[in-house]
Each structure stands twice: as structure tokens, then as C-alpha cells.
Amino acid sequence: MMLGVQKRLAAGILGCSKGRVVFDTGRLAEIKEAITKSDLRALIDQGAIRKLPVRGISGARTRFAQKQKRKNRRKGYGSRKGAAGARTVRKTVWVNKVRLLRSYLKRFRAEDRISGGEFSELYRKIKGGFFRSRRHMELYLAEKGILKAKPASQPQMQQQQKNKPENPVGGNA
Image 1 (cartoon, rainbow, N blue to C red):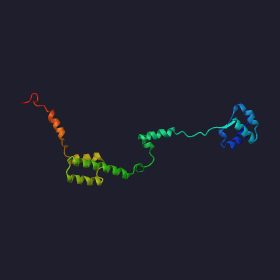
Image 2 (image 1 turned 90 degrees about the horizontal axis):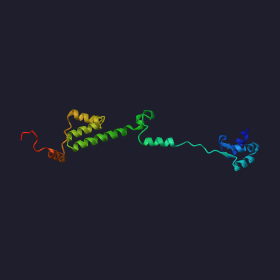
Image 3 (image 1 turned 120 degrees about the vertical axis):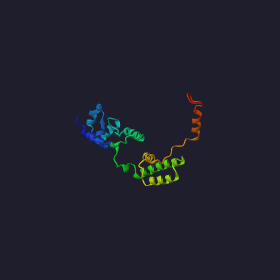
Image 4 (image 1 turned 180 degrees about the vertical axis):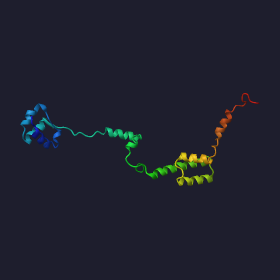
């Protein structure tokens, strides 16, 4: 049954494309006889002709991707578009590294594991970008023998003395 003209006119009335116009299969004969817009309007009011709802784009995949990104997933090499400097600014990386190294150095000074002069020298080295990372700084301190052994705190020493046996077995007492 050729209903191309009816479909085109109905699409104009309904304000949508021909692809969204649907005819009631039981009333095709009636629709074929309708040749004017007023005939088609009457059939639309009766429900013989209707338009399908717009098919939207599902947001489910997007929501899932966002959820994964919040968990720091989907960050591999295949997902990266910008250069490393575009993703994390070089200055931010530098500031974070310097802050980490300085706090680490201050902790050593507070624990009296380095002297004031060594502190100043290392502080300037950090500012000059000498150390690549915290690990690099540790290796440097160990290599140069700058770092003193960590002094045992008072509660630890008391605990060690408490656990020491009074008269060891097999000892010369």
C-alpha cells in the first residue's frame, strides 16, 4: 500500500520527520483514503496516526566512565591526548616535589639527624633542583654519610631495658 504522501503530510502536521510517523496497521485503508491535511488531522486526533518519541543518547556509559575516572582509572597511555605538561603543569609538579623534600629535610633537623649547616646546604640543593626525588635525596644522604643514626626515644629505651633478662642463661654471673 503506497502511503508516502500521507506520511509526508502527517510529518508536516506533527512537526517531525517521516521516520517518526507511525500508522495504525488496522486502519491503513482509512489512512489511504485521507488525501487532505484536514483528513489527516482527524486521524491524528483519533490515534490512527501518531509520532514516535525522540530517541535520546543514553547517559549510562558516560556515567560509568565518570565513576571510573573518579577512582583514577582510565588514565593509561591510550587515554591520554595532551602532552605531559598539558595534563599536569610542570610548575605544579615542581612545587609538590620541593614541598615534599623540604618537609622531609625539616623532619631530619627536628630529629637532630642533621646539623644546621648541613640543613642549609641541602635546602639550597633542593632549591637548585639537585634532587630528582625523595629517594634520590635519601641515597645522597646515605652515600655522603650526612644522616646520623636515628636516636632511640625515651619510651623505647625504657621498654628495651625492661625486656632485657636479669640473669641470662649460661652467662657468667
